[in-house]
Image 1 (cartoon, rainbow, N blue to C red):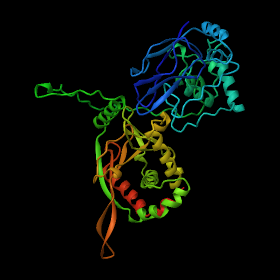
Image 2 (image 1 turned 180 degrees about the vertical axis):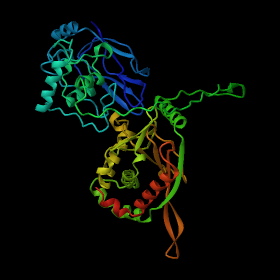
Image 3 (image 1 turned 60 degrees about the vertical axis):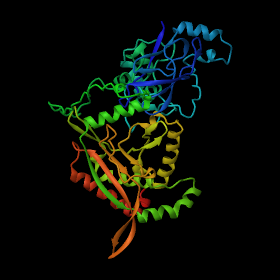
Image 4 (image 1 turned 135 degrees about the horizontal axis):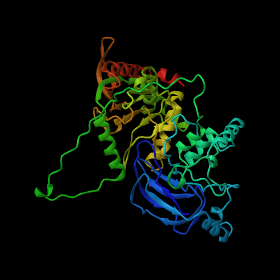
Amino acid sequence: MARQFALPDLGEGLTEAEIVAVLVREGDVIAEDAPLLEVETDKAQVEIPSPVGGRVEKIHVTPGQTVKVGAVLVTFADAADAKRDGASAPAGSPASAGAAPPSAPVAPAAPPARAARPASATPPPPDAKPPNDASPAPAARAASVSTAARADSTRSDAGPVPATPATRRLARELGVDLRSVRGTGPAGRVTDQDVRGAAAPSSPPAGAAAPAARPAKPLAAVGVEPPPLPRFEQWGTVERAPLSHLRRTIAERMALSAAVIPHVTHFDRADITDLDALIRRNLEPARARGVTLTLTSFLLKAAAIALAAHDRFNASLDAAAGELILKRYCHLGVAVATERGLIVPVIRDVDKKGVLALAHELGALAQRVRDGKATLDDLRGGTFTITNIGALGGTGAIPIINYPEVAILGVARGREEAAVRDGQIVPRLMLPLTLTFDHRVADGADGARFAADLVRLLEHPDQLLLEL
């Protein structure tokens, strides 16, 4: 029976992707996890590996085509045909690699630097550990055995289990044997929900607390349908330029955020004279250690400390449930301007890293983004965003919140201004700050207190250097 591979759910609300390149041809016999397609999603170009090994019977997409989640990308020949093709292929060819028996898994072809694992139907929790290629621990193996004993399996031991790499990782973490799981995805693909269902106990343990009751009336958001455009040709010559996939995605996200979130902005300024002097003094020592010290790295650290004291700004609002989701991790997004548009990569666990480590990671991450090598993992899981337009000029800006976050910090260019210090008028370097936040989550007083703590930290940079 032929097997179809559809574009998986990429998580984070992504519903479509643009095909950048097709890396196989019809008739090729490929190994499981071998590079199959290269796609551009929300803000990254990523490589999608093959979920199974076998012969490519039909390719349903072409470069430049935009496809929705669930659309069929490639059809593979049935397992019997693939095995015959593999048996007839010379040793060392792609066919012979694709025909390897499941008892001796074939190592996937090494992906290029910008390759990323596609997200599965349900993104893993943000604090999930990276995949571990080692064998499961004894406790995990025991859990796998018990799970297999109670699962209703209809899959034979022949052939690889159709599942994405992210789903395989989740199965390893939960100690679930994929061969014992009934797949409910397209063509029998095992999804994250299937794995979690196989790992979950059939009934809650004794003494477990019952889930909290949901409110009867969910919060609602009202959308606005724009009126049709006039016919501009009646007034003169026009030219229509199609929006890129990235620009369309940005437009949709910004419209969603502006329509759903009641934005409110608090303005403030920080005297960063001492911080600027500290950065200048340490530029060369930091560069000798391979680090470019910037203001943004200090902003990241200050924001992480302030968020720990004001956790409602490090959250998301579940409007349907009427609940505020307070995140006990600190993954901060940093807006990076590229030729393709504004991209927001994420630095994880900012609260657990020092300024020099953040500066080093920020430089490497921003370069990957500009080179088009950022992965999906680089762009997901943010809890709060910083956008620093100081290098481009301007006296301030009111940014739009990066949904589903609830706050964003805008930073403009610092300028020397006359200030009174100890009865004397002296020049001081003042940095304009704008904190935009969701008024459903926090009030103006909350925003003012958060901004005041942020200003205090920036005006005493030695405290930031002492923080881990």
